Amino acid sequence: MSKNTRKIEKESLEWKRKWEKSNATLIASATEKKERDDHALRCNKQVEQLQKLLRALQKERNHLYKVIVAYK
Image 1 (cartoon, rainbow, N blue to C red):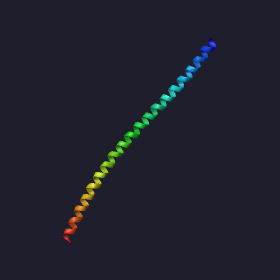
Image 2 (tube, rainbow, N blue to C red):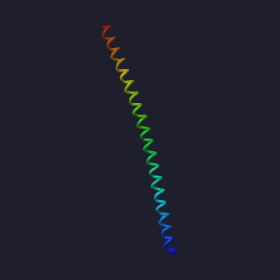
Image 3 (cartoon, rainbow, N blue to C red):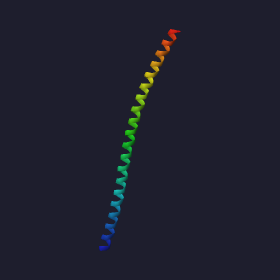
């Protein structure tokens, strides 16, 4: 009986270690995903700001070009 109990306790500890390891891996993966999502969100905001700046610069360039053409 004691051999069987030790065997079951050993298996139980092994399963517990496996669960803790997979749980730690899951937490690490979730953390990495959150960081990637946050980075992607920041990059998308930056892209939108750069696009707005580009449109503003193109509009200003077109306006200045029309002014130059008008003076010729």
